[in-house]
Image (tube, rainbow, N blue to C red; front, top):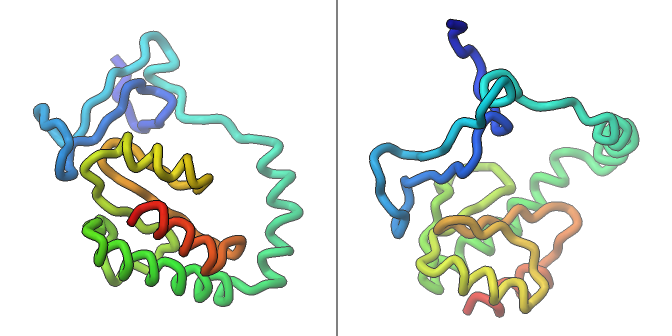
Length: 152
């Protein structure tokens, strides 16, 4: 028997974590089913040629704007989301000192939140009991206003 040395998201199905408030709580922090056959044992992913081509164009563009400028802009938006959504009763799951442009909040009713965001034409990830925003250089304060209006 070969010992597994790598794990990939293409080896499993029905993955759910169970660490946030309102999650169902079976044994363990997560549950999943391994795919049958060789894919479930060895498949960890495939290099995307389209992604490589896109990076060839996008990386020089990002460098022309400046990583520091992109990070500063995103942090302004993330800070506003944190401040306002905490005020509206959405606990942050992302630690306050995190410099990531991704911020997550715990939500009690993910389906209702997803419906409100969809109705307002707002792109955000709502899965299990987490709401995740990832603002970037393509977003501005008006996008944050729109999200806050949909969630308040």
